[in-house]
Image (cartoon, rainbow, N blue to C red; front, side, top):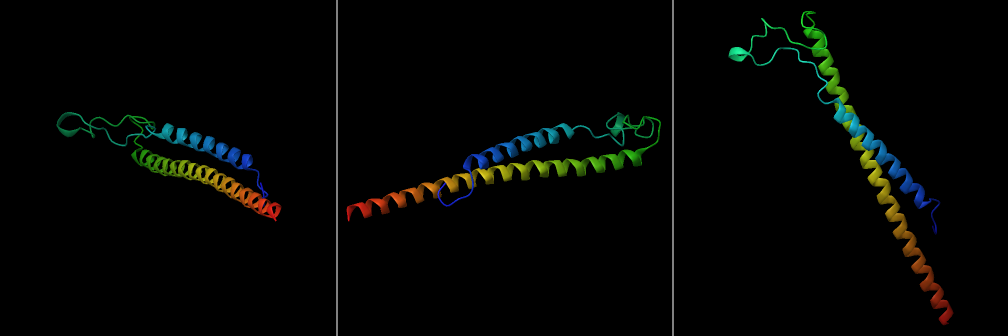
Length: 125
């Protein structure tokens, strides 16, 4: 590239690698859905009988750990948010690098045209 110390293919390769990372983060984000643990029983007769039928969750039906289950759900929600942010920022960075490559390529083409026009003008004199 005229005037640039950057290889356009390096930019494109980096953008592709970041897009792969964004895809992996997206897969991880989707995989986290549904891994919550219910703290209270849902449904049931007349709006639910949570006291009679303890919730089935990762902490057991009879372990009496609703605070642990709630802490797990809170932590999981934070992790889901962070992984979703990782996905978005990585995808945005990938798109930005591709755009930079496009702009560099356009600037390189403009420089070449300018140099060719200048050379043609000199040859005409």
